[in-house]
Image (cartoon, rainbow, N blue to C red; front, top):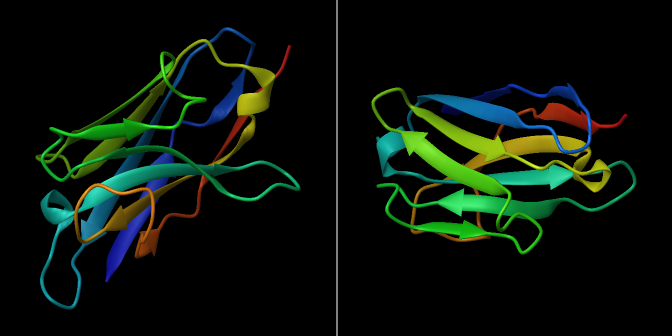
Length: 126
């Protein structure tokens, strides 16, 4: 089984920055491991549906960002460390949410994620 653990959330003032990390361990029933997964970040604000934020291909060569994240957020990964990152700059109060990382054994996509972490809270407030 694949486990995902997020960290790096917290309280930050508007305009500030945070870097979220997601550490992966384990493997799928077919033997796939982190370096074979596309990874994504999603967020869910209180009372709202979960929404896509960013995704990265297994190699790191391809990325996809939601319109709300473009120009402010960067997704990256380190396959040697089994970790994916979300660098968030110029944070706004509307970025407040629980951020989840997710893994899918396939190509880069906004959909079809098989494994999910528990999430880390990001609060943007003065």
